[in-house]
Amino acid sequence: MESSAEKSAYLLKFLYQNKLPDSKIMEELDVNSNAYYTLRSRLNQKIEEYLLEQIESPRTDLLKKVANITEVVFTKKRPIIIATLKKLEKELKDFDLSNELTIVYKTLKRLHVHQPEQYYNYSQLYNRHVAYMLSVDKAEMLITEYFKKYGDYFFTQDETDKLELTLMRKELLSTAKLYESHRLYVYKACVDIFHRLFVEAEESMDDEPIEDMLQRASEVFSMYNVDPIYYHLQIVFEFLRLEYYNHYKVYRKVEDYFDEVNDSLSSLLTNYPLYTFPARFLYTKIERHLRMGSEQDIYPENEALFYDFEPDKNDLPTYVSYVCYRALSCYYVKEFKEAAKWLNDLLNDVSLKKYPFVHMNVKLLLALQYCMLHDIELFNQLASSIQRQIRLHGKENCPYEVGFLKILKTLTSPNKRNKPEKVRALANKLSQAMPRLFCPVQYVKIDEEFINWALS
Image 1 (cartoon, rainbow, N blue to C red):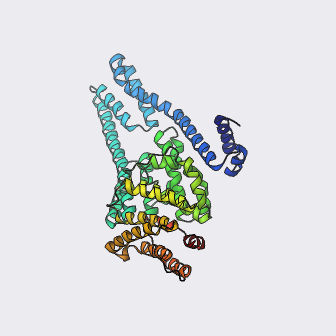
Image 2: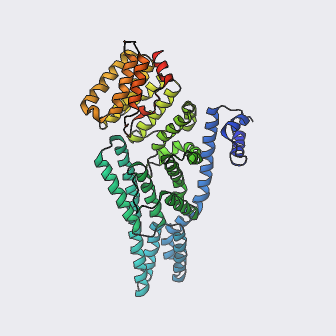
Image 3: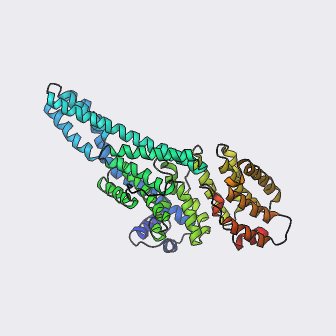
């Protein structure tokens, strides 16, 4: 197999017909892991583009008909105009295009101005769909604002931010109850499931079970399989399913969704912060690899996963999470200089003064790299800066960071007596501390390999 086209064709066959595992496909194609993941990512993109073309064409034709209503009104006889609009009404309902339905009802209302009963009926339909359209717009804005606010909460753990999230969730649930609408239900589910997994884990008797919500959303997607929004939201619900099973430690089920979500990671981070908090998957992925003892596998697949990814530096929670994920993946394969570069570039690119605990944690992760590189001068400079921040915010508010810094200072101390024993004792104490929501150093294993490398 010489050409990339041939390899793509065989890859498609191996994945979807033969259903071979990744390792076997790499062997069949005679490619390394980097080349394989690049090939797979590009194939997925081509499949997605093809499917999108297939599902958009009927909807596009319908929108063209709506745009042509004025021409029909001015050039056709009245019975033909009304028949055309009634047919268009049915088609628009099938596609759940409420915005366009208001144009149809407005036109039908005007056409029946001399028929009071019909005029009234179409006026009611018009008013109802305008109100529904505004509710959908409100729901979409609430979703966007909710996940922007969650990014703040993820960084600060501020109780005011948490209260705002709870109130936004309640408002979205109330909006969804106004109409028997599958679209509002799906939008509500995006927030409700995430909120109950990552903000308020306590279940209420009035809450719909998460598995039921996931199932119902899946049924909506199947029923309206030509809807472009639902087509794209399917990956959001795959992500939510994965996080649901991960939350309840049903790791066998996590594996059912991991590959699909992981393959879509670049797209999730770029295009989906309007509907969820995709950066969460970066940490779930690290947790999974640490659990399986395969954290060294993260680094080699990054090139393929992110070959065309351009992070939005204005979206700080996603950007900072992405850089810390890249730095940790470098750390796991002992590429400490590369990890330090990622973190230094981050600190130079954006200001984290609004989020002091985030700033502290990024510096702490950078200090780890200098510790492993045995660059004592740079480490001491950074450690002094971190200690000043700890004193400013109080040790009681950042116990995990305090404990981790103590371990690094013990490893870099000129006093060589009993270092391994001291580090083990500190690591045992650290395991009792509760890390903050954003705490990338919690994904660093303080084991014998760590101690031996730092002291080598």
